[in-house]
Amino acid sequence: MKKTRLNFVDLMRGLAMIVMIEVHVVNSLMNPALRNETWFYFVNFINGMVAPSFVFISGFAFMLGSRSKLAEFRTFKYAFWKQLGRIMLIWFLGYMLHIPFFSKYKCINIATTDHWMNFLGVDVLQCIAIGLLLIFILRLAIKSDKVFIAAVILLGLGAVIPAAKIYTIDFQQHLPLFMAMYITPIYYTNFPVFPWFGFMAAGILTAWFFMKSREKGSEHLFIKRLLISGTLLAVTAIPLMFYLMIPDVRPNILFFAGRLGVVFIILTGCYYYCAWRDELSPIILYPSRESLAVYFMHLQFLHREVWWGKSIITMSGQSLGFVTCLIISAGVVLLMLPMARVWNYYKTKYNYFGRIAVAVMFTVGGIVFMMR
Image (cartoon, rainbow, N blue to C red; front, side, top):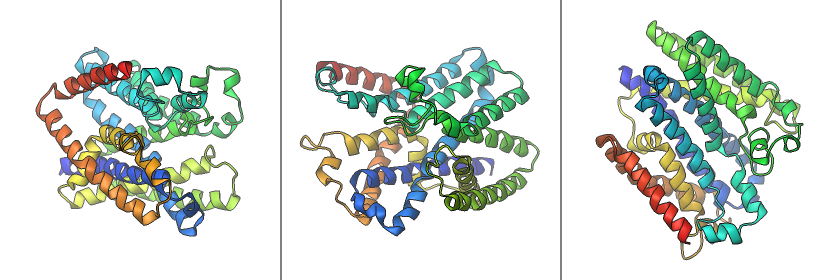
C-alpha cells in the first residue's frame, strides 16, 4: 500500500503534464478571439493551475527523493552528481526551447534583439531549475532538519510577501539583464522567482510534513487537514481576488494563496484516488515519470519548422476552435506516450542508458548546430 500511496505524486505530475500540453496547444493554435468568450475564463483558470502544480510537485518530489540520499549528497558521491546534472539539464533545456534558430550561422547573422530577449526570458523550467538548485545547496549546507525547514519557510515567505513591491523596482538598472529577468516579469519572462519560488517552497514543506506524519502513522489525518486547509484558502482568496479587481494579480498574495489552496485540493484528490486504485494508466504514468522529455519534445513538435519548412503553429494560423485544439492535444499526448514509455523502459533497465543517450544527443545536436 505504501508504494500505491506514493503513486499520487506521479498522478499529480502526469495530470499537470497532460493539461500543460493542452495549454500549449490552445495558446499556439486557437483563434485568439475565442478568449473573449465567457466559458474561456473557466478554461483559463484551469490552465492557470498547471504551472503552480508543476512547480509545487517538483519541490515535493525532490524532498521525497532526496531524503535517503543525503549522505551521498554531502560526500559528493554519485547521487550528488546525478542530482546536480538533472538540475543543469532542466536549466539547459529551458533555454534551448527558446533558442532563436537551431543553427550557429542563423543565430549569429539573422537572430534579432527580440529573438535574444525571448531566449533570455525565464520560463517554468528555468524557474524550477533555480529553485531546485537553491534547495539542493541548502540541503547540502544545513545538516539540521529543523534549521533547513525554517530556512525554506523564510525563503518561501520572502518570495511571496514582498513580490508586489519587488515588481515596482526596475532591476535592469541594477543587474545584468539575464539576472533581472529572474526577479520580475520583464520582456518574455513569465515565471520569475517572485512569487513562483513560493510554490516550490510549499511543495518542500508539504512533503516534509507528509513524511513526518507517515512515520507517526497519521498520514490520513495530515491529508484531511491539507484538504481542509486548501479548501479554506481557495474559497477565501480566489473570490476576494476577483472582488477587489486587482489590476495585476501575479505578485499579489491572494494569487498565491488561492492557487496554493487549489494545488492542495488536487494533491489530496490524487492521494485518495491512488489509495483506491492500485495502478495508474500508462497515459498518466509514463508522461509523469519522463516529464522533462515529454515537456521538451511536445514543444519541439509544435514550434519547430520541420513540416515542409513550417511549424504546426504556422500552418494553423491560430484559426482553430477550442474543441479542435482539445482533439489535437489528445493526439499530441498519444504521440508522446510511446516515446516516454520506450525511454523509461531502457533508462530503467540499463543503468547507463540515460546518460549515454543524453550525451549522444548533445554531441550530435551540437555538431548539427555548428554546421548549419
